[in-house]
Length: 385
Length: 222
Image (cartoon, rainbow over all chains, first blue to last red; front, side, top):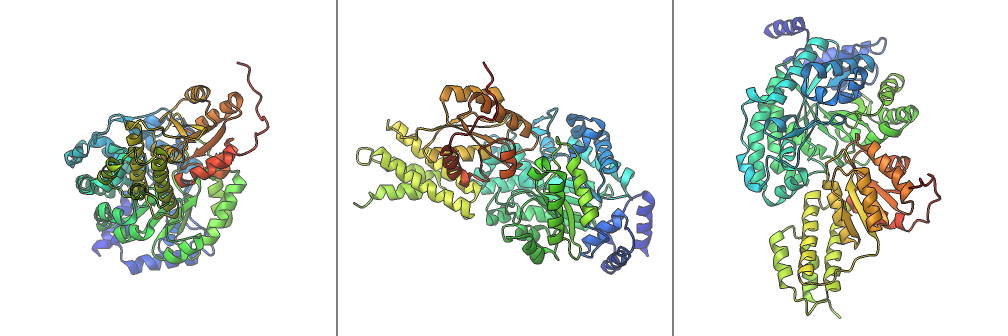
């Protein structure tokens, strides 16, 4: 009864309740009902996404173009404004949603939000993603790892602004779509403060020092995750790029970062939200990430290290996680709409059976290219999904 | 004649991932007893093993970085001993295009090209078009290797390629980086594409032995 009251309260506030607070049989029943309904009529975006997350077949494959900064073209909002101002960023996301469409929205600014608040000097280019100033890293020497401490989250400007973005988006679109927050994993944040190349060497030569810094960063990331959970978003995505061939060897990743991503994931799940993993690296260690984070979904750009084909991926992991992806960036940049739609159809054929799949680019939509192929993704989901 | 023991040690220590061990082995080398070409040969053999392991997936990027460091430590020792470090004739200019500062991939490729015997001119990151053009003019390099990890600077990469075609049509162009694939590389006018550092030597060899391309863009009079 208490849960029902809470459910009605959150709906009254204009957003979805945390699904993890609802009984599993209820969620399955709702998904089964939507699955049956979807055979005869269109589902709402929320129904469609939730049905697929429960590994049941919706009316069609859900799709997300992961437009992010790409949508700033619609209203001519600048990159720096998008990256630093929650209201303007929300205008970008909302205009992308209204103009292009999609069934869920992943709110992702850039990979330096957290590092900026740990004191990393930032550069905000006019025509590109915000990035650290690597000429002035926070961690200059190995000894500096010991100086990395948790920060006062109330004073974390960029993270607080991102939380504000989440709140604004929930207020504007809370019952129209599924919204997801985002954070970079501890090792990822550290790479923004040290430089990836130096960090990789340090992981091999000074793993204890790196781990200690990850522990400090994780304490702040837990607060960041909790703050996002509190806004009414339905999921939080953890970007764990270095759990792939682009990063550390698998056993070293599990040793250095695995436990911290587990802690963050558990924090999110305890609040009743879904956990998604984003990893656009080659040969991602999907098994290790499932062990560490037990995610509800994985957004990927390349096949994992233990699967040779998408069919094999679906067979091996399709009932454990919802797969989100994986139209390649180069195809979106240079391919014709027809070529993009053909690639979408192939992936839908391989991955969409029995739900548990959301069509998406492998990573954020390239922000400076025309939106034509974002429309191609939407069209492909409608036509072939 | 059996290889001197030290050459075997040099070959193996490249893969050791221990800078201290590398230093220990190279400090034992008696340059009067072993020719620099033999030392370099052993280092190159070690790097070739590392490159194959990288390609197979049995050597990770952090491990490979330490192999490159070991190779460069060895080059440092040879130079300290005033040894002549033989290089191929071809020079390579390499850099990350303007608008991007992610240089780890480029640094690894530069290391692989050095280990393969090329004379490498590394321009660093966020390199403007004109710096690439100037370097090609000064060095007479036969290969230009361009890198980017982001989609936003792709237009800059395309621009560099276009100008190189105009001003240095004899130069072959190799590209790599996360937002690229073979198809896009061709579409923006590159001669070759390497998905990873392990593929670079083979791809460099392939494009350098290609027959001269017909001119596709008219030469602009200077």
